[in-house]
Length: 263
View (tube, rainbow, N blue to C red):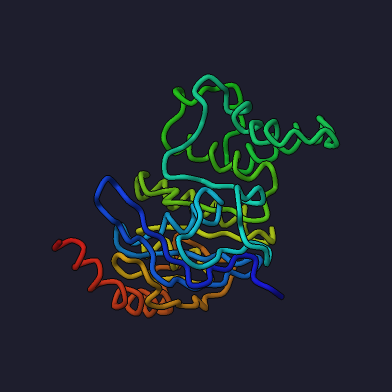
């Protein structure tokens, strides 16, 4: 089988005024269908740029990004993207925000009752039943993130992109939402690519963890996480296997993180 996502010797340079920022350099990586891949690395190493390239929001300077074996040349309508900052519209209720991707898709062949059933299903899946008529301003940060996840899943994307989805949440709520994410993903057949600064989160969730170097971002190592599923994110960190992976990955990350911090 061909990988669903492939980066082939991808490089990307940004210009801010007269400043040249070399974000990515010669990145090659294949993501298989149904995989959960976590990307970690120091700040500014191009992790989010990889997701933006996959979503078709920008093009590489050099190299090729393919989706389903075809080079991306525009917006990738096969993916949903959960960004760091939630994109909920403040004038729409939870239910209306979750419905928004279906409205934008404007598929007249889909039965309206089936759409409403899907909306209710995903609101329940993320634990927001009873809050359908609430507006974003009436929700906590965690509840807004749950609504954003339901919004991303309701259109049944083949791939879900997530950029630091739980980074701003407290440690306890982060664990709860990690568990809910796994529940939504496992058995779905969906591909999931996640950017995170949290090495514990990456090991707990992923099939493979990709470690990026300091800018310009290059792939230093790709570690397969051979921990059986289903996984319990509350207890996995206490297992010997977890400790082994954490030590290996932290060894790969440490020098680059210290380099960025000391700049």
